[in-house]
Image (cartoon, rainbow, N blue to C red; front, side, top):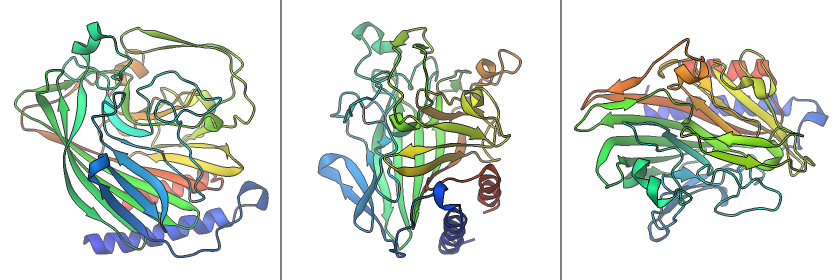
Length: 362
């Protein structure tokens, strides 16, 4: 199918999604926007080292690649907004908001990386890493913006990135195509990422820290009456005290009907997170694809606000019953395909299952 034909099919798909949200009971949704036409603009801001994505002139998200921001050791989409403009991602550390958690400064917006690549940690890198550990960290840097495209319901951004060793030598080349979609009360992002090993074999050792991830706003966390001790792959602990749960409404549901914190370390073809953010009912979902390695993937989705799909951490999530240790020989490539949905309204498990089926058949 041509790209034009694919766009037409996807617009029809999104409109059908809007219909099922609009048909939800009144208590389970916000009033739909009166405006029915949307325009997706993808705008380069080279001086600021970012690309803005606007819908009808209003911000949806921005692609950030500035190496002048010390905490930013990878490219990110930040922040993510609903069709009503409600931000569903955490502000910290770039724009902290009152009442947020301030753990894990590397968890920013929506990103894609991994915790152990030829012994380097691309996931946990931030300006919080002490000097004596920086040799353990990998960095992802922008190489080129290859294509941008705006449209009535769809915008496109294509980029090339380098996954670099601490001394700056790249070990992986990343080619990513973002497709941004908008119809009333619905936003969606497709991320199609191809990783190519350069001049050496690249091993992705089984690790829980990965891979496509979103750090959500405080309101979408799970309420918790217990303090937390959060530990990264290197065993470094962060103590998180008991927090005020006022307005904290998040609830995970996976494709098998498992709910809450139990979705962690379970295989599933999709997971959705529902909650109320600033009076906006939200369904935030990530879809896995059968062509991805390890499908259906394990999920690194935590109640404290980390929402991630990790196809490569099988030994960790299965408690040693499985092991993958995926590797790319020099010159070899693999592609990951994901879809992120941000719905203004609550979707049921049955409705999300139907949308996932349409996604994989598209």
